[in-house]
Amino acid sequence: MKITVVTTNYNAFALEIKRLKEEAEKAGYDFSVLDLENFSFAIKDGKLDIDWLNGKISDIYILRGALHSQKLVSELLEYLRKKGAKIFDNNFLKHKYSINKVADLVKLTLAGILVPNTFFARSFDDFLKFGEEIGYPFIFKSGRAGKGQGVYKVDSREDFLKMIAGFNDEEKEAQSFLLQEYIPYKYDLRCLVIGDRTFTMRRIPKEGDFRANFSLGGSVELFDLDDRGKDLAKRALKAVGLEIGGVDILIDENDKRYVIEVNHTAGFVGMEKATGENIAETYLDFAVSRAS
Image (cartoon, rainbow, N blue to C red; front, top):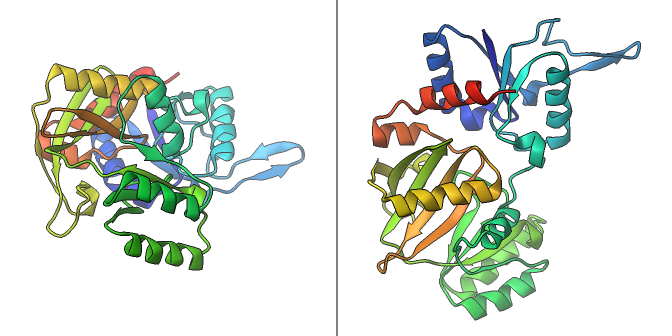
């Protein structure tokens, strides 16, 4: 059986794709990667000509990391399905989603899931007002970036004004960001949900950084999450409409639990390190079983 992973940013997911390749080859699959950063096609005599296909369609295509070009990705997957291939897209075609943390937070709130107090605005002046209302420190972050990129802890109005000046110089728009209250936490957890299975690790920031992302050099360790926490992670994933995803949860000293965000294309190499589980095999088996 031939399996192809489709991505729009290979470099961002290289470690996970490498692990999927290892497990696919162990299982006897013919594995390949289609990086849409290098994608090209032509229309000749009224027919679509995609050179990398060479007339050959894989049995299953697994979408991992559609960070941009959503319309092109959608049309490509539909084309492949019409050609007889099976697709596992993590509900991408159903929802036509992109990374949009604001939309995800709205979905979580409507599902009755606790998230930090959050503000979205169309101008930096409005964000300044929200900052005064919520109080310092607070979190200011990009609504579309991932892996801990574009996330800032703002400790004072002066720091925020300097940050805004920098964003204006770079011609970044206010609507690309969101502002959240800073939650002093006891545990920073990443829950990886794959179907009915849940894997959990505690994330610990490296010295001098408030962000606990494994991809930014933070350390990880196995965490024995209770059933209440696992249920929260599954409900969050369902609210956003995914079958596989990473749910970031903060637990404070009073055992209050906040969902910070849901990651549509969560890394799992750190989770394998923390849990000792073969996450790549679980991911691959689930994707193959759900492809249609």
